Image (cartoon, rainbow, N blue to C red; front, side, top):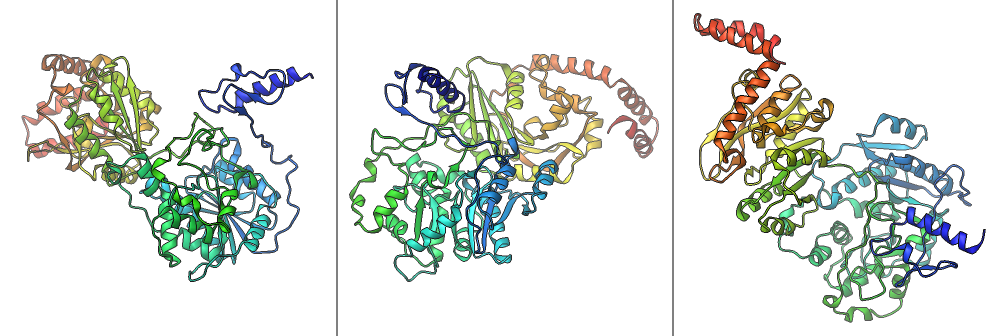
Length: 621
C-alpha cells in the first residue's frame, strides 16, 4: 500500500470515528500524500483503543497484594456490553483488586445475569428522586454505597471510576501507589492520611477548588470524607441572574464536593485562586488522562475538548505538568486577573454511544405568541417544582412574536430542551411533535400561560408509581387571580360514565404514561382541533383507568386568548363531531346508559345506583 492509499484510509477512518468539530473538514486538508493530516488551522491526530476486550493483549504485570477496591459507579451501559466488558478488562489489567459495581435497581435482567456471572460485588440502589445539580446526587449515592461496601470487606484503598468510562492502561493502581509514595502530603494539621489522586480531565486550573470527581484514588477513610456529602438540595432559581462564568466558579457539583471535603479535614478556605492552587499543591495529585488511558465516549469524540492554543483559556486543565510545577515553585500564576481569561464552551458533537439515563417525567409545553409575563410565570412554575427529575421540552410553534424565542433562550436550566418551528403545525401537530421528543416515562401536559402548583409533579408521580393500573392522573384546578376551585369527578367510575357527555379531565392538569401512546399507537387527532384533548380521552376510555387528585394542583388562566377560548363556534362544531364518532364507537355503552337514565326517572335513585353498579363492569374498565 502506498502513502497516498494509506493516507486516504486514515481520512476515511477519521471521518467515521472522529467528528471533532463542525469547522474541521477533512476534505479541505492540504496534506494528501503524507502524514501528518492537517487543515489550514491545525494538525489532526487521533487515538485508537481496542474494542475486543477478550482478545486484546492488555494484561497486568503485577498482582496487587494490598487491599484495593475498584468502585465502578453509575448506570450500566448496555450498548456493546460496554460496562460488562470494562469489568472484564479490569480483571485482566488490575489483577488482585476487588471490583464493586454500584449501580441502580433498574438494570435489565439480561445484563444483570451477565454481570453476576463475573463473580464481582454488585450493589443495586434505588434512584434518588432529587438528582441535584448535574445529577450529583446519583453520583454521591452510588459512590458512597460502593465505598462503604469496600470498607466492610476490609479494603484499605479505593479507586473510584464510572460505568461510562474505561481505563485502558495496565497496572494503573501500582502507578497510583508510587505517586502517593513519591509525593507525600505537604503541610500538617488536617485530618487527611494521604493525597487524593484525581485526573486532569475536568479539573480546571482557574476554577476555585475545581477537582474532577469522575476518577479518584485514595485511602478508604479519606474517600469517605470526600464523598459523604449528604444530599444536594439545589434548585434552578439559585442560578437566576448568574453568568456562565459565575456558575462555573461557584455552583458546579465538583466545587461543592471539594469544598465540603476541605471543611471536613479542617482546612480554612480563603476562596481565592492562590488558595485553590495551594490546596492542589498540598492535598491532591493530578494525573493526565493519557497516563491512565482514560476513555470517555460521552459528549464528543474529540480527545482534548478543553484544549485551545489561540488565547488564554479559563477552562485550562490542571495537568500533571502544571501540578508538578506547583510543588516547588512560587504561585506566580496568581497574579493573573481571572477576569481577563476567556470563557469558551467545549466542542461537542452528537454521540449516540452513551444512552444517558432519561428523566422520569417529560413536561410538554407548546408555546405560540405568548405574552411575556404569562410565559415567564408558566416556565418558572415548572422549574420550581419540588420534584426535580424531569425535562422541560418547549416547542415554539412558529410564533410571529420574536420575544417568545428571546424569553425562552434566557433560561439556562439544563433540563430545558428548546425547539423552534419555522412553520406553524397547529396545536395537535405540535403536541404530537412533543410526544415524539419526550424521553420520560410520564408525560406532564402543560399550556403556555397557565401555572403549576409547586407540588403538582410530586403528587402525580407518587400516584402513578403507586397505582400501576392507572394510565393518567389529573387534578382539580383553580383560576389565576381567583379563589374559585373547579372540582371534577375523582374516581375512574365517575370520570368514565360522564365522559361521553362531558370532558371530565382537564388536559393541562394531567400526567400520562408514555407507553399508552406507544402501545396503542394513539396520537392527537388534528381533525378534532381545538378539542384534541377530548378526543384523546375517548381514545383512551377503554384502555386504562383515570383519576383526578381532589385538590387544586394547577391554575388556569381564563382571561387570555387561549386556544380553548378562541372560537366557540368551532369548538361547538368539533364537540358534536366527536360525540357522533365516539358514540358510534361505544354504541353498546351509550345504549346501556340511555336505558338506565330512562329507568332512573321511574324508580328511586338508590335503586338506579344498584342497577348501575351491576352494569358498570360491562360498560367501563
